[in-house]
Picture 1: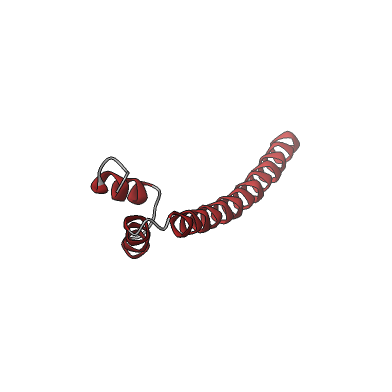
Picture 2: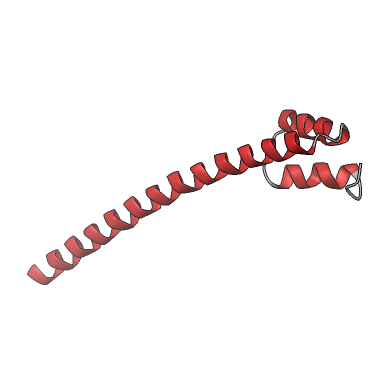
Length: 81
């Protein structure tokens, strides 16, 4: 294994949110020198993270809009009093 230490490689996988099952699959492919498979699995995980990030970003945008509308409504109501 060319990576400095196997534990370090597994720790990196854990740090990026890869579950134990996927981590074992990636480590097996890496120890078999199947770098194209490792890269494919990592890119698949990256795509999943990006999809989740975009979903959360959309939720934040909607939340910001709702907060904006309610603050505007609150300001309008306080001016009427």
